[in-house]
Amino acid sequence: MPLVAHNDLPAFERLREEGQNILPAEHAVVQDIRELHIGLLNMMPDAALRATERQFLRLIGQSNQIAQFYVHPFTLDGLKRSSEAAAYIERYYEPFSQLKTEGLDALIVTGANVTGPNLADEPFWGPLIEVMDWAGAHVTSSLCSCLATHAVMQFRHGQRRQRLPEKCWGVYAHRVVERAHPLVSSVNTLFDVPHSRFNEISRAQFEAAGCRVLVESPEAGVHLAVSEDGFRLVMFQGHPEYDLISLLKEYKREVGRYISGARKDYPPFPEHFFNLKAKAILREQRDLVDRYLDRGRSPPEFPEARIAAGLDNTWHDSAEGVVGNWMGLIYRVTHNDRRIPFMEGVDPGDPLKLVR
Image (cartoon, rainbow, N blue to C red; front, side, top):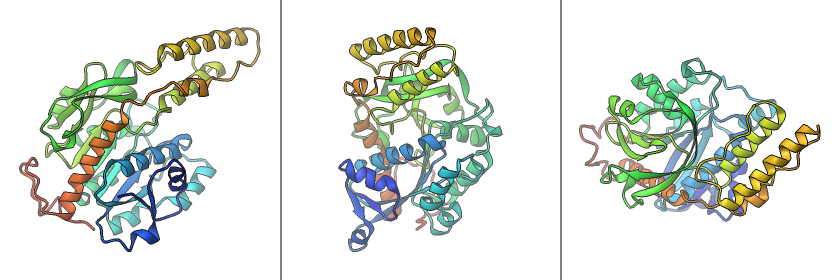
């Protein structure tokens, strides 16, 4: 079943133009089918706020056909916003207090930009703990992306992320290491995932916290891990929600920082992402940028369209599979018998109670 456009969030119209199945709210109410209400805690900065909405909405809408999905975007107080972004949030986002009253079946928490090495010093720290504590008691399952995973591992398990020698940036091959788990059933045992991060939580740290590692890469480390019960907390370190051009946009932004003087070195290519032709074009671009800067001239326009035409998405199908399995389990817990054999020791009458 499709996403339900239950408000006038611009992302719904953008996805409809892409060919996504977006159901008007007036049509949804007459159908005798289960609803799933999913909170989307969007902590991304202003420039990435709307793109992140679309990425997760697209992933949700394409991944499972068992229910109608109502997605409720919200954010945290204390995050610095421009007046334009604040107005957008005021119009289209829902207050957390309202979601606590009405309840959610599931929660997705995005990453965020940080300003220092200690996550506890970030403005989102206290409000995020409040949301996650509430979700732990009232939401069937929460899915954390990248920085959110690092934050949860620190404040809930005392496992602080470690700085990498260099940025983990690119598209990496991953292997399913716990194949019997329902989250990765029917998913390829070997699949790609994009990463973009300077820090990581290692396998040893996840295991020290009692978490179970499901998917990892010899190059990029752990991608997918779950809480000890196997379901209540799902943690990504990669970015399976990324669009085809997300890493290209990041690379373009870093080139812009080099041109402006914000970074001293020309950015390296994201690993395993650009083909040989794209690399040749971008090396030529780099030579032109340096030549123009040496002469005090404005560099030529970045060849984004030429590069984008040759990119391949090698991760989205597997991402749909994992998220679809996740929502299928949520549906089962909240709608059917609530008995999931792999969740040993979990009392279905309390933490998995129907909250809506």
